[in-house]
Amino acid sequence: MLRLNIEGMHCGGCAGSVTRAIQTVDPRAQIRIDRAAGTVEADTDIDSPLVLTAIKDAGYSATLF
Image (cartoon, rainbow, N blue to C red; front, side, top):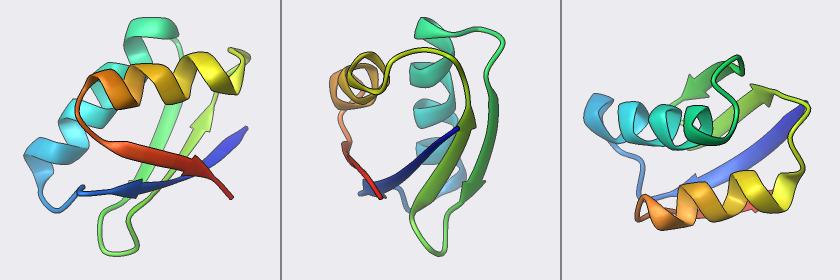
């Protein structure tokens, strides 16, 4: 499981964009988003650099915690 801090994720549309970005690299990922905290938990077997790159390509800054 990856736990990520996402900068700039403020609304449902942003959360949807982050979800779609993660699902581009792992369509079966289970994703939980807390917009208020700006965090994402993604249950995936994909390496974190690929997930971070997909989120960055979607226009968001993401870091592991």
